[in-house]
Each structure stands twice: as structure tokens, then as C-alpha cells.
Image (cartoon, rainbow, N blue to C red; front, side, top):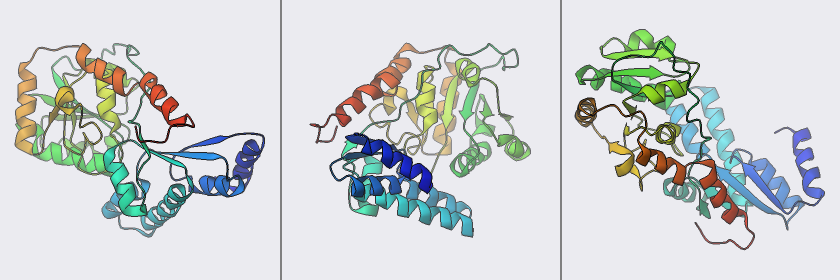
Length: 301
């Protein structure tokens, strides 16, 4: 958000806007300028994460000057968002509570994550495994790397079902992750839909982060059961018992995987798909955001 872009935003507001919806708390300078220049305009900021907390986790993994600078930049920007927004929209109660601890103000509204529906977009790739398999999906960033490395060492070798790791960047960790056995790194693929549709179960061994985990909503979109840590199910607490199973230890993951291996393959579970449609689809998000953006709405939803 450079000076030119900021001036363009202010010009649009000057032409008669009554609300400004800011998609990301790291755009705090937009909130500050909009509110100071146009006090009567309602500013709404959507928090995908508590960014300061998210990048603090990255700093703990990589203690570099650049990582520290990223934390500070996001903290300062996010503080502006909290100070100068009329409505603060978080994905979960946890993020709302964290906002209050860091900045002294909690969310005014809650709206869980939403994902575009990609059901039925697979191409039935002939390269997919013919066996029953567990699926891990995610890009190579600190929380995913730490989680799947732990899983490869302590869970996969002892499970009755092989795990496949799909996601950009994981190719470079192939030899490390496959060392203990019973786990295969695929890396980037043309169609995630193929892999979700053919997977027997989805695993989410995540131990750090903020916001809500995309892979859980994505799995439900394809009607797949999720085995994940409490962190993976953060924001999904109300549906966790129906969406899959919360696993806190390696033995719990192994037991859940073995149970899944004994169950018949189901391409799509309609009950799991319904959880996505009711809670994490674009249609569900539109309903929530309509209520949030109605000027008369003032209480948390």
C-alpha cells in the first residue's frame, strides 16, 4: 500500500462511500487515513489472522533480522487497524481474545473462513495411488513444515495406512520426510481436487499458527474426514466432533488412522459436505457479511 494507492482509496471514499471494508489487518494505514480524513465513514477490518501472532511464530523458527522486522511491521500496522476501525471481524473466538490481549480491544463480529467451492473439478489423474491413503495438504511454511516433520517421525511409520504429502515446496524435504517410511512426498500437483476426492482421510498435524486452517474447510468441501490437532481445529470447535477427530498425541493419531484404514472408502460423505455448505461456503459467508455490514448491526454475531 504505497502513497499513490492510498490516495486512490481516499479518492474513491471522497466520491461518496459510506463504508470501507478492509480485507486484512496489515492494511492499518488505510484504516487510519480513512477514519481521520472521513470521520463519518464506517471502517470495517477483516482479520484473516492476528498477524503479529502469526509472524511471531515464524520468528521463533527463524531468528533473523528480517523476520523481526516483519513482526514489528505487522504489529504496528495491525494496531492501527484496531484503533481506527469501527468494526473488527475475526474468524474465531481465539483470535478475538488475542486481539484484546495484544491491543486492548476484541472483535465486534465473528465470521469463520470461507472457501470457493471446487467440488467436481478433479480430472481423475491416472497417477493417483490405487491404495487407501491419508492426505496432508499445505504449502511449505513454518507451521506446516514442523507439523508434518513430527508426523513423519512419530506417526506415519506406525500407521496401517500410507500418508501422501501434497503441497508446493515440499519436494525439497522429500528425503527427510520419507526417511522413516510409510510416507510419500508428492509436492505440487495440477489438481488438488483429484487428491481430495481419492483420499481416504485427511490429516492436519499443526501445532502453531493463528486464524483458521484452510485445509480443514477444504477437506469438508470434498466431504472428507479430518484427523487433526487442537490447533488445526481452532475455530472449528463447534463442528470438530462431526468433522473428524481431535488427536493430541502420536498414539492418538496412529489409532485414528488405523481405524480409518478399516473403514470402507467413501468418495464424499454428504454429512461432512453439509458442514462446509452451512458454515464455510461463500453463500454462508455472504449471509454473515450482510449482517455485519448492515449499519444497524452493532452486536457480535
